[in-house]
Image (cartoon, rainbow, N blue to C red):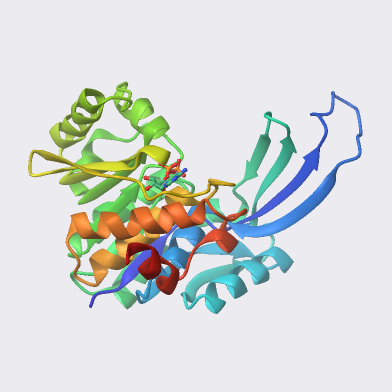
Length: 303
Ligand code: ADP
């Protein structure tokens, strides 16, 4: 059994409901304030640990109450956080969310997440990883750091997974260092200009990533499930039925579960089934980390 090393963001999500978005200079009364641990890196690490993988988190928070809470949340889920630095003079990353009906507005302040440079990630890899371990990352930290870290992880013999979220233009040479690329519909469209809304669109987009040098690509399609290109063949994993109430962190849960199952030696198709079941369960509960299911819940759904 290998380990999962996640390099990525830790954010406190601060969200408040409001009857409408306030005008410039206006103050309005809202309700239902929630401060909940999130950040794509942290969410994926939590999902990986909940699925039973030995999971290390690499990242940074501020030396403040949000940072303490975020690390505590991961530790409680079994994530090893020795490589999460708590930094003075920089705030923990936050996402400030105005929940107005049908018109959510979000401002992300990366804070400490932006301060991690490649040397820190590379030395974490040197210290905790062994060849065959899984390196999982996303695009919420510094882009150059992330690209350098992927290349270093690959050179060190790790299996590299990039969740290209949120969408950002990537340097063309990174694709060859990615063993498994995972994108959702929006990210797929942004990176290839191809919409995966039809079978043909999925195939064309998957082939486009393959032509850039990615070994295996997975596209998640929300309630339509997910597809993958494996050695020139397209595989479709049907979604599990879910009474979806909030799709926040469905993608993160999918990624964490996928990485965890691959680390336990499962083949990619079976790992995608696990990830789909975990993603479906995450939509049945509100919030980010609080919606991530346990191993037992996923096992029951699969059975
Ligand atoms: P993201 O959150 O990154 O946009 P998706 O919405 O594509 O990611 O969701 C990731 C995975 O979670 C999907 O591939 C699917 O397996 C599962 N999922 C998401 N939404 C639903 C849903 N409404 N019903 C069932 N499964 C879902």
